[in-house]
Image 1 (cartoon, helix red, strand yellow):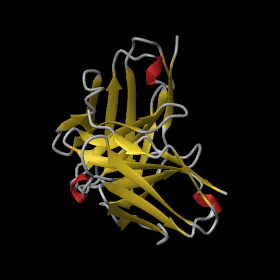
Image 2 (image 1 turned 90 degrees about the vertical axis):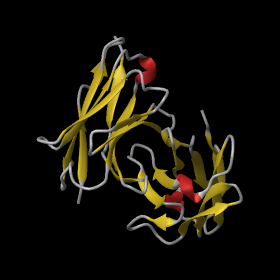
Image 3 (image 1 turned 120 degrees about the vertical axis):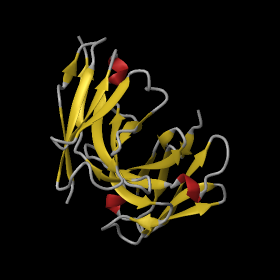
Length: 109
Length: 119
């Protein structure tokens, strides 16, 4: 089964920019995988950030943006804030259904 | 505003069947092109899609769980349900119900319910 890959962890300074990626163990991610991104803080249900590659969900600040970079989907946070410290998950839609990446733990310090 | 709420036993014995229900409010479960979904998260680990059911009754399951999973819908109660058979400790997790739109993303999440598998 195809695995969705994410960086296990990432660090960014307050005010900085960070790009998290979402790839495939075999092949390239394209818009036809409908990449979506979710933010989760401890003890909370996930929050939807981005869907269909680059569409922000309602209420999501415009410092969160999605794109395709090379052969991966990407989530970019511009001007990182302390409360962006969370786990971030990408999801790709495949013939077998929805497949979650393993998640990236983002630290803001 | 659509809301989803999970309910069911918080403790299940090994080898038994885990059963959860998701009650949908703020909208009809039978209207629109939506996939009513179950997603889980073992303690300290990542999210895993379990499966979903479309309004037509068509079901789609994670291949790794397919042999043990059944998702069904009760339109009269505006609910959908999950059954996971032959559970083991590895099935201990927070279980979320969710709505997936036609663009294949989760637009509404339940709060989640913790299910522990233990004798």
